[in-house]
Length: 258
Length: 258
Image (cartoon, rainbow over all chains, first blue to last red; front, side, top):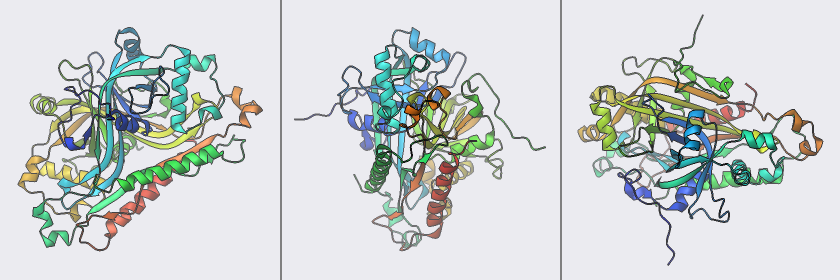
């Protein structure tokens, strides 16, 4: 029997509401992280600060030790983006690393029901929690930089000027987050109204209900002023087209009840 | 002379990097919040917890006291979504409210340069920090519910079964966040490469550089199985079309240097 690996249910990640939409499976959670361009990463408040820090960052799941691991296996989250020197110091100096929460949400549709209260979005969201440490080894840093670059456009890394030179290696900071736990939530389907409203003709004859599918779309690539490559390379065109097709299909599929 | 209102620069919101892209102006920051479907809201860690809590929520800027206030004036942020009973208790019982950080990011393009290190996204991001309190008065709750519903689809509120009944009023929790401070970051333009790479023909002749514009797209609305309104109402069609046009234009404009 094939069993899905699940994140452990701890007090901070146990879903309390709509938990029929919840998942602890590694596969769907890691997929949501990897298909979201920008993650929001939250750090504990600084000294004399009540507010947690929150930053947009680029991130991707991967395993330097087992690069062939698939998305439903245990993976680290590699993060790229500017982190203040205070946070970097904690990440570097503490034994465990810096505790972080990582959130990703994709909206798949506007769900329009009879009453404002039952309006909703179709969406896929994931939260991971773990400890972040800066990556020190050059090999692991290059592994993560390639994952991150290929997340922006598949196969981009091998089609740019690589490897990074010494200055680029030193100036790039990558955080590796060892994941403690995580959870996901997926809402799909049409509007769910209550019988008290669905049975009243004066309401149902007036209020349109349904779903407006939503997806992230790419327009045709626009060359820079200094670009010298005359034709847009096939790997870019193919990435743009396949992402558009996949995103649109996901949004349309989400209209169906799970 | 017309002067833009700015959020105060405090240690926690002063932008330290790429600060030529930064803004403290209320107008652009509030606009980013209002055009982002799902916000990520971060709360301080619970007892014996190292990790901040982070949740996807729907939120919108508004002023119950001055409903005619425009987006570049001081506003509260109204949040809707499930918050744990622990957080709700802090929000309700503490004098100031629950400290929260609210983040919104819109991706406008993939910026493809000669080297992996100078790859980037065109984006608009905003962070607000403030104190959250549950809204108690029915009038203010209805004001916020209407703002939130009309954020999903403009004019939707008046085209649904309103007002909410007693059960709906009681079961809905809205948080009002008094904003302490905020900041925004906007990146637009093409790739910026270094002279050391731009001067080498073997690189520039091989690596395509430019921007892939990215925007949130709506597909044609799909009626629910129980929908009885034969034609899609004009306010929905018009919202779908104008949002698509506006989003696409924003992504294409972002390709130009600011």
